Length: 277
Ligand SMILES: C[S@@+](CC[C@H](N)C(=O)[O-])C[C@H]1O[C@@H](n2cnc3c(N)ncnc32)[C@H](O)[C@@H]1O
Image (cartoon, rainbow, N blue to C red):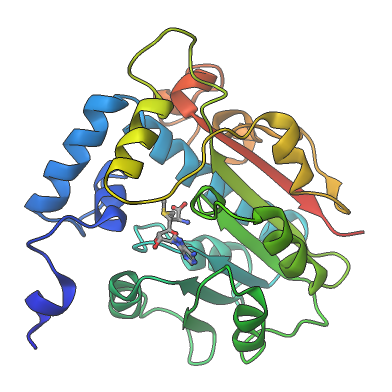
């Protein structure tokens, strides 16, 4: 099998379409055409994807710099568009260890090929499904020490878990020691402007029509339930653009990142970070 066949570059792939929204280079014509269909349903999707990614950067910086966490478990990694989680964590904690997990073999092929930085043993890639959290934890323990704080990232992932998502998160968080954090973001229809056709709801209908189960009917209250047993850090569950924009080093350089310039409906994704007491 050659690389072209293995990576299926002639067919659209959702993780490469997401890379395209982020301005990455790991996408092909078929991916860009599929991305255009989603953009017709939800023209703000590029802004939303970038805001979601900025949230991941800020939450990772917060964990590494302000809390001194050196271990990161990122589930639902996606194509590692730069800067990726390891690069952000490493900036503030040079000895950071990161375990990347995805259930998509194409994503893991890209991750292995693109994430070559870091000393041996500091980055691992696990092919696993978050719906089997015990397996993820068992494999992650080969690289991470679960007696020391871990930053768990479930970024733009849990909307793909349509059955018992809270149980999955409870199991994962239950394995983390005191001082660990959970950073979680989740696409939502609840921030859509009422009466507007082009919306998150329309984009998610498109996903379902293509056979990808996805949930968007998650409001702020249900989001808070993901942080059960954790201290929900300020500012709580908010649209991605409103979670600690002060932590973004590019904020002053990039006009698009000035606080207040992105509306909640453009962001389209809830975000929060909780700390285990
Ligand atoms: C929208 S991307 C998010 C990528 C990255 N976390 C970010 O926010 O920039 C969602 C990723 O979750 C992965 N994914 C979806 N369902 C999954 C599951 N059940 N277990 C593990 N990964 C999953 C997909 O393959 C995809 O790479």
